[in-house]
Picture 1 (cartoon, rainbow, N blue to C red):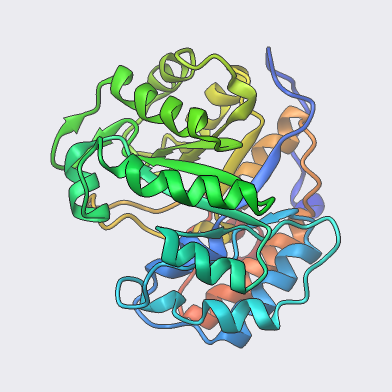
Picture 2 (cartoon, helix red, strand yellow):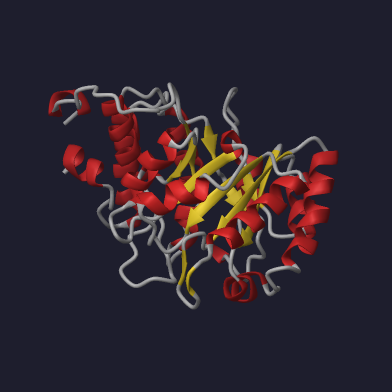
Length: 309
């Protein structure tokens, strides 16, 4: 069943919404890296092609993290060598350090992302660093990338809650984020890594930044708040939202975590609000249903389930 046959939502605008939103698709990287088994590179390449066909213009393609830590993305060089890049589509990749940047530059990438932590425990466990010393690892990556003409995004994990430390102080998150922006990151994505945020907390955090236009949001749906949190972010001035086709991905740090905000669910909400995004929902649902078949399980996306059964 198509979205139109099922009855597209009536457009009812809410206050303070942008005319258009950029959807930053993380399924090929953040989604697939959480799979138990390795997805063949041929399937990954077709997935990227299908997502581009659906109208998505930012596709986070892969990661240059050491294969020992993320074996699901050990084929990063092979994938990028086989990728037929589309005009008007960006293919950012994640890099953890200078060695990752070396690999990315050799592969001819034009857009990278680095990932930082808002908490000391996660910085130690995930980055093998302290909360303060992590910036010493990022500075040469950002400066070299900018010198090479690359666009740079900074991720901040654990912005609202940490499974070891609990609630994260707002000023601590803002401090980490501003240091990444001051370092030269073009954009900052604030991540609710374990999916505990609520809309009021989102609004309060975003109010602590001077230039909301440079911010993006990355929500997980553990407690069913991802769409509500996204709406709060849009009303606060955010214009870029991270999501994952079919709701791919998960969070290993929270029990019952349902993973990333599904791109289809986001598109359905934006359509109902009259916010432009450029994505063909039917093609996107077909793509997510196709990928779910290859993974051997139903898509977690509520919209995919409603439209494709």
